[in-house]
Figure 1 (spheres, rainbow, N blue to C red):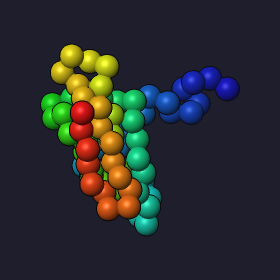
Figure 2 (cartoon, one colour; figure 1 turned 120 degrees about the horizontal axis):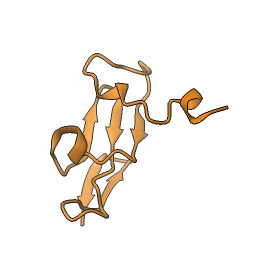
Figure 3 (cartoon, one colour; figure 1 turned 135 degrees about the vertical axis):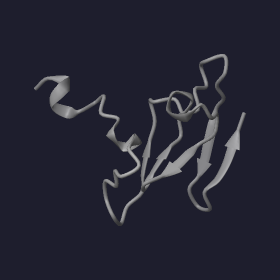
Figure 4 (cartoon, rainbow, N blue to C red; figure 1 turned 30 degrees about the horizontal axis):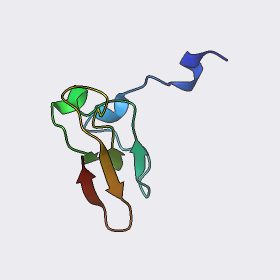
Length: 75
């Protein structure tokens, strides 16, 4: 199989109408939030949570999401 077969670079979840699984929340990373909407905070939408806040980049920060109560932490 090729990488394309796995949709590794699929970003269709950025579409407002996209809802992957009705009864589940999926946590994703590897796409820094700064490239999605210019924020430096965790993004929660459409049953998805993007936690990659670009820590290795000059404008990024390290983020942590405590799943028990969804509290966000940043360094």
